[in-house]
Image (cartoon, rainbow, N blue to C red; front, side):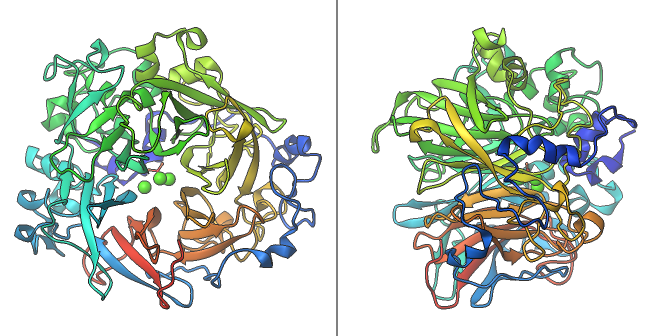
Length: 626
Ligand code: FEO
Ligand code: CA
Ligand code: CA
Ligand code: CA
């Protein structure tokens, strides 16, 4: 018997199902404890409605009353609780592409409001649950690469299946609606449209053949019956955030891959399965109909997922490559930056409660126009350690620091980070690098288990500097500046850019930092990207019930932050039920493309099933704003 209720769970609740937290916990601490732990800031960091300035640490001492000097050129939008998109006065939005829309003309009309998409055309349409998105200039054209994080079986499968695949064909359908879409877009004067039948259009699914690249290629840990060489793998699963290399390729980031695997027989033993939440019943019954996903049959198949995969959007015949040197965990995004010493740095978050923030540094340097060969295969992974005195270090993951060999470090990166002594974090989501100065930001979305239970490896998760609140349901954004303005340096200074909270409910740490007020409050920051003008765009994936601790926050939203003043204002709200995820701009920066994932109701069609979509947002006066 399969438990069909599993497909109703969010991905983090799925983790919780496999590893429940204790009914009683030994860490119950009062809220004020989080505030007292901020003592190293000299008392200057205020929470709630207090009058103190959010100005120590890296923020300038500019008070919020001077925020009128901020660079925003629009008026903020109000909270919303409806099934619409709202953008500021003077802006417009329109749906660019919906789940089920055809990428090739032979799939036109593939989508039915009653039955969704049929198997025969399911790899020729835009995938479901749009997420990490990047835009590329290819031969003078605009090409978007965007992943589809997961599927909603209850939307895609016949009602009789009750949300759990009941046949190999149903599994095949679910596989095809996830993965990655590459699509050309063009502005015909009436707005951007997908170019149907473009030679650049491509679908990558859970069956697309890929290469295992980097140090794990050919290693025993990634050999299977189907691939005794350990060099070829099919599919990229549960891709969440994304990245863009300096040489114009797309990085897609495998997040909750663990949920696709199950055991129909005996579970293989190993700490690695436990740490990554692999075992038991899979989320979609893949393991029942495809032995590749049955770990009692293929114990190494899960070791071939959980990586950053590189895709060349300019060549639809190219083979994607899993870059194992960037480690295996529940990757959020991959933010690449060219360090001042010439090396390539990639910042990487692991989105699970109490897991870590990572950095990859290439061994060799790169100059623009040079071949990137080897840059993502030969380098060192580091885990972040944040000290309470606002300093931090990148701890290298090496055999010396972890007691593991080089291959184990990449296959079981979480265990290496624990051994090295990284700082447990409140679910690291996207990292964004400021284009105007050597500075990076990470969204720590929330962590209801902070101070309540250890992470899956048993590491303590008591409140710490960048994660100061027990039972943190709101989240925060932490930023750091590398020593010597060199992203490859091994130390940094950090501070909290914002602590989300609800100042209308709490006048303590849960009321948020001083740059949070009743006009901009939000919870669970997730997606982030900088625009070229140095503004930080923040997307939320949080509680949208608008009640209790979340009263007054309304639907999920996209906000804009000014790194200089700390001011944050609300730019956009999305339909009830949806999260906002994925953001890129047209080449001329006049149009932003924004992902709307798992909307509620019948958005955007107004009838039938809800459809995850990408929307275009532009200024009515046609001016650039990215
Ligand atoms: Fe799929 Fe971490 O968001
Ligand atoms: Ca996300
Ligand atoms: Ca999230
Ligand atoms: Ca999501």
